[in-house]
Amino acid sequence: MSLSALEALGLVTYALLELFHLSGGRLTMGLTTALFFAAYGVFLAWASWSVRSGESWARSPIVFTQLMVLGLAWSFRGGETTAVAIGLAVVAVIVLGGMLNPASMEYLSDDVEDSPS
Image (cartoon, rainbow, N blue to C red; front, side, top):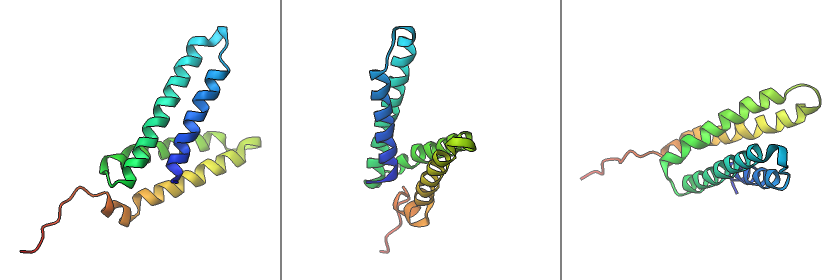
């Protein structure tokens, strides 16, 4: 299973946890947060599956997600959350490395090579 698919699973899990912790005072915020993370998690899972199928469009949302994760890791740096920051950054860098690897770029390329006649 790819790391971006695991990230998608984490997003959907977070959405479910958010639903289980709804309270009257923050019902609207909790529902919209859960909906957002569930939808993004499903979309990221779809993009991860599509990359495995060679769909070039799927590279962009995965790369965008990793850039957001790097920003999130930066915000967690220092203090008790340093380990979380390191974990997030390591995963994001690994996924970015895989997505921007020349072999991956060639595999996901939409270019049709001219076949010799």
